[in-house]
Length: 334
Image (tube, rainbow, N blue to C red; front, side, top):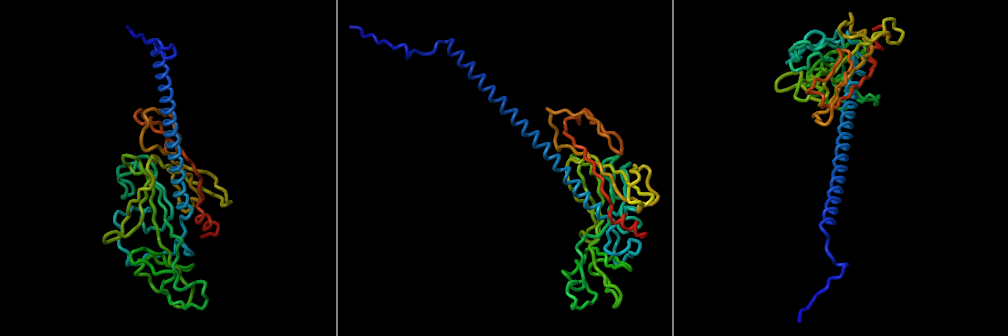
């Protein structure tokens, strides 16, 4: 006797057409989900790149602004009354002229990089960008006694809140005069007269270094190995142009009359009371899905990315910074 099994209709399998439709729907859903994921990932990357670009720009401006605002700050000592102690050695890699580490004819100076070697000290700068030189003291003074303790004995030897570092350069001065010397060679000021304060001395030379990723760099005065040197500090990657205009107040009314390109340098750099800073930044690495052929207007000329440079996101920042100490000295007739 043959046994016949009957399969209920509810348990029948897929037909070929149903299987093909289900497969097609699955592919469409997978493609849609993948497209959404790829788009979200791309959007997140674009937001991250834009945020990083903006953050780097703000940080670069913050560094430059702080330095420029303190240009020409030499404690209570007049810039023209600073002398150089004979113990100071030559500076390895020093710049020439107004950019020299111990030249006090000006506390601020700007020049364009137009050749392989600029100011005799920069041989790796990006051509046509600007060099910014700042001279000042750092606001961490040393005293010979606690200035808040009126009963403390003043012996002329700097020891409060700490002793000077032997190989660091300090400006020890007051309103009468100042001496630039190593911490180990600061002269004891004579009894009587106004007490002196010792301030750490700083030279900062900002420029764009021509690396694989252009970088905002500064040279600073420091002791290295066996002598003083202008040493490089790489600050921020992706800064590809630094351009500067100088602001002049010819009638001393407290307002800048005009901002001029440095191709027409001032007769007296101590008359420059403000700087207009332009920073052009780009991402460190290109994005092949992004194209930017925009032209950027800068004081050193318009910049349009070449074909192989158009896959970088860019940001142009501009800021006007007042040189407060120079302005105060001019108002006081110093």
